[in-house]
Image (cartoon, helix red, strand yellow):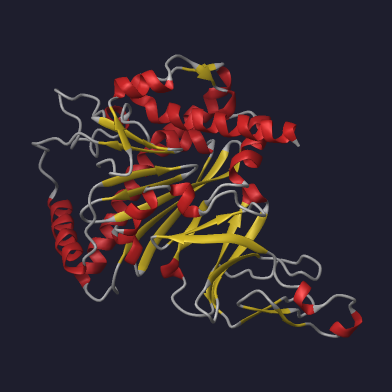
Length: 393
């Protein structure tokens, strides 16, 4: 992968000199009090990725997202006017969750408890015997959550009045994302996993190559050689709270197995034919979104914290056009499963790290774990800012 132009590139030596060296406390990876500060200072007032517009192809389309860190369920809906809105999935009568389906299409949403009915714009359409209530219908609409879209990617923000727009949050990355294939995706495949690990510990695994030769001896072969034994990136990129890296590429990678070679050859041809071939890009967007583009695919990996030691990961593989041939279906399924299989190699070792991290009081980052340190320091700074704001009243 290559760091995007929106990132300020630095050598590992320069980045380490800027961000610091030496041990850091291990407590942020397991301490419940620290997690509560992260929840308040970061997750409840930062833009969080929840889906893609291709999941809402027409008026009335909706999907539901459970968001444990906010202790709520969200209903994301495309209204009759074409606008996409986010609501708490909660009837405003007495708080009953409104929708249980994961996704679908409805013109109206009716609470099964007392029959209150809402439109796709969240407004209360009707309620049985409403004349006996002392409130106005216009004051009983579904509770909104801030929602904005960039490159087809849907983000929500739980702050009552977000301090910055999504584009301000992303900075120059926003314009770059708009040029990538994900912006025109018409379909998505996904798989979801839950892991017994802190969200940062899970994300850290995808921010360093130090482990490749040990955990991925087969899949890491393209960038691990005797001359380059750890497959370290050749440069790192930074843009505010966001990060990236440029990977070294083996000029003489080992031969691929026949099935893999066939899948990648077909995928490359179809991606070019569909105009869905991506430059090699790598975005690690704060706080918990990883975006990866290659010539044959584009995928997102959202790592949603469930609590201090549990995370739900959702990997979405994007594509354009229908599955109208055996070749398309084969290449899409193969690419999705290849991503899944690589991540499956990581799971056990990440959980082993979470089980053991309480027994040490510090973590020792090396220079090529600079993206881990950047995330650690960004979280620390966000919490310090939040504390100062609270003290200032």
